[in-house]
Length: 144
Image 1 (tube, rainbow, N blue to C red):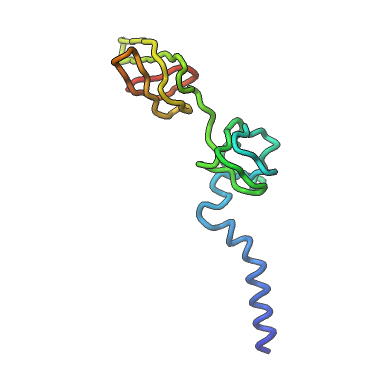
Image 2 (cartoon, one colour):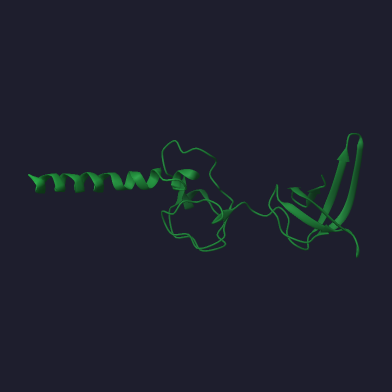
Protein backbone atom coordinates (compact mmCIF):
# COMPACT_ATOMS: atom_id res chain seq x y z
CA UNK A 1 0.00 0.00 0.00
CA UNK A 2 2.84 2.41 0.85
CA UNK A 3 4.55 1.65 -2.45
CA UNK A 4 1.40 2.51 -4.40
CA UNK A 5 1.07 5.82 -2.50
CA UNK A 6 4.70 6.69 -3.16
CA UNK A 7 4.35 5.88 -6.87
CA UNK A 8 1.15 7.93 -7.11
CA UNK A 9 2.79 10.90 -5.35
CA UNK A 10 5.83 10.71 -7.67
CA UNK A 11 3.57 10.53 -10.72
CA UNK A 12 1.54 13.57 -9.60
CA UNK A 13 4.75 15.51 -8.88
CA UNK A 14 6.16 14.64 -12.33
CA UNK A 15 2.96 15.71 -14.06
CA UNK A 16 2.75 19.02 -12.20
CA UNK A 17 6.45 19.97 -12.45
CA UNK A 18 6.27 21.67 -15.89
CA UNK A 19 3.21 23.69 -14.84
CA UNK A 20 4.97 24.77 -11.66
CA UNK A 21 7.94 26.02 -13.69
CA UNK A 22 5.74 28.17 -15.92
CA UNK A 23 3.89 29.61 -12.94
CA UNK A 24 7.05 30.81 -11.19
CA UNK A 25 7.83 34.55 -11.19
CA UNK A 26 10.07 35.54 -14.10
CA UNK A 27 9.07 32.53 -16.19
CA UNK A 28 8.09 32.67 -19.86
CA UNK A 29 4.76 34.35 -19.09
CA UNK A 30 6.65 37.57 -18.35
CA UNK A 31 6.68 38.43 -22.06
CA UNK A 32 4.58 35.67 -23.52
CA UNK A 33 7.13 34.66 -26.19
CA UNK A 34 9.95 32.12 -26.39
CA UNK A 35 12.69 31.58 -28.97
CA UNK A 36 11.84 29.00 -31.65
CA UNK A 37 15.52 28.31 -32.36
CA UNK A 38 18.95 29.11 -30.94
CA UNK A 39 19.61 32.81 -31.56
CA UNK A 40 23.15 34.21 -31.65
CA UNK A 41 24.01 37.54 -30.03
CA UNK A 42 23.09 40.50 -32.26
CA UNK A 43 20.16 38.80 -34.01
CA UNK A 44 17.33 41.15 -34.99
CA UNK A 45 14.19 39.24 -34.05
CA UNK A 46 11.68 38.34 -36.77
CA UNK A 47 8.22 36.83 -36.31
CA UNK A 48 9.48 33.31 -37.12
CA UNK A 49 12.17 33.55 -34.38
CA UNK A 50 9.51 33.48 -31.63
CA UNK A 51 6.41 31.63 -30.58
CA UNK A 52 3.75 32.64 -28.05
CA UNK A 53 3.77 30.67 -24.80
CA UNK A 54 -0.03 30.54 -24.82
CA UNK A 55 -2.45 31.02 -27.73
CA UNK A 56 -3.59 34.34 -26.21
CA UNK A 57 -0.17 35.64 -25.15
CA UNK A 58 -0.30 39.14 -23.75
CA UNK A 59 1.94 41.96 -24.87
CA UNK A 60 3.35 42.84 -28.25
CA UNK A 61 5.81 40.48 -29.90
CA UNK A 62 9.34 41.89 -29.69
CA UNK A 63 9.78 41.89 -33.49
CA UNK A 64 12.72 44.12 -34.45
CA UNK A 65 14.36 43.84 -31.03
CA UNK A 66 17.99 42.68 -30.81
CA UNK A 67 19.45 39.81 -28.80
CA UNK A 68 22.14 40.97 -26.38
CA UNK A 69 23.47 37.45 -25.71
CA UNK A 70 23.07 33.89 -27.03
CA UNK A 71 19.50 32.65 -26.51
CA UNK A 72 18.65 28.94 -26.51
CA UNK A 73 15.61 27.48 -28.27
CA UNK A 74 12.61 27.61 -25.93
CA UNK A 75 14.12 30.34 -23.71
CA UNK A 76 11.81 33.26 -22.81
CA UNK A 77 12.45 36.47 -24.75
CA UNK A 78 12.74 39.11 -22.03
CA UNK A 79 15.06 41.93 -20.98
CA UNK A 80 17.99 42.16 -20.59
CA UNK A 81 18.55 39.27 -23.03
CA UNK A 82 16.64 41.19 -25.72
CA UNK A 83 16.30 44.95 -26.08
CA UNK A 84 14.58 47.39 -28.43
CA UNK A 85 16.67 48.69 -31.32
CA UNK A 86 18.71 51.85 -30.85
CA UNK A 87 17.07 54.98 -32.28
CA UNK A 88 20.35 56.87 -31.86
CA UNK A 89 23.91 55.63 -32.40
CA UNK A 90 26.96 56.98 -30.61
CA UNK A 91 28.68 59.67 -32.70
CA UNK A 92 25.57 60.29 -34.80
CA UNK A 93 24.49 63.89 -35.55
CA UNK A 94 21.22 64.60 -33.72
CA UNK A 95 18.62 67.35 -33.41
CA UNK A 96 18.25 68.55 -29.82
CA UNK A 97 14.78 69.95 -29.14
CA UNK A 98 13.55 72.00 -26.17
CA UNK A 99 9.97 73.22 -25.96
CA UNK A 100 8.07 75.11 -23.31
CA UNK A 101 4.66 76.34 -24.38
CA UNK A 102 5.06 78.53 -27.46
CA UNK A 103 8.86 78.54 -27.19
CA UNK A 104 10.66 75.90 -29.23
CA UNK A 105 14.46 75.71 -29.45
CA UNK A 106 16.30 73.42 -31.86
CA UNK A 107 20.05 72.76 -31.77
CA UNK A 108 22.42 70.44 -33.61
CA UNK A 109 24.72 68.14 -31.67
CA UNK A 110 26.51 64.80 -31.60
CA UNK A 111 25.24 61.83 -29.57
CA UNK A 112 27.76 60.57 -27.04
CA UNK A 113 26.01 57.22 -26.48
CA UNK A 114 23.60 54.89 -28.25
CA UNK A 115 20.02 54.70 -26.98
CA UNK A 116 16.61 53.25 -27.82
CA UNK A 117 13.52 55.47 -27.75
CA UNK A 118 12.85 56.56 -24.16
CA UNK A 119 16.44 56.19 -22.94
CA UNK A 120 18.78 58.97 -21.82
CA UNK A 121 21.26 60.42 -24.32
CA UNK A 122 24.24 62.67 -23.69
CA UNK A 123 24.80 65.20 -26.51
CA UNK A 124 27.84 67.37 -27.20
CA UNK A 125 26.77 70.75 -28.55
CA UNK A 126 30.28 72.17 -28.97
CA UNK A 127 33.77 71.58 -27.58
CA UNK A 128 32.78 72.65 -24.03
CA UNK A 129 29.01 72.18 -23.73
CA UNK A 130 27.23 68.93 -23.10
CA UNK A 131 23.48 68.37 -22.56
CA UNK A 132 21.45 65.35 -21.57
CA UNK A 133 18.01 64.44 -22.87
CA UNK A 134 15.80 61.55 -23.91
CA UNK A 135 15.72 59.82 -27.31
CA UNK A 136 12.27 60.45 -28.82
CA UNK A 137 12.89 59.19 -32.34
CA UNK A 138 15.58 58.61 -34.94
CA UNK A 139 18.20 61.36 -34.59
CA UNK A 140 16.03 63.37 -32.17
CA UNK A 141 16.71 64.15 -28.51
CA UNK A 142 14.18 65.97 -26.30
CA UNK A 143 15.46 68.09 -23.41
CA UNK A 144 13.27 68.03 -20.30
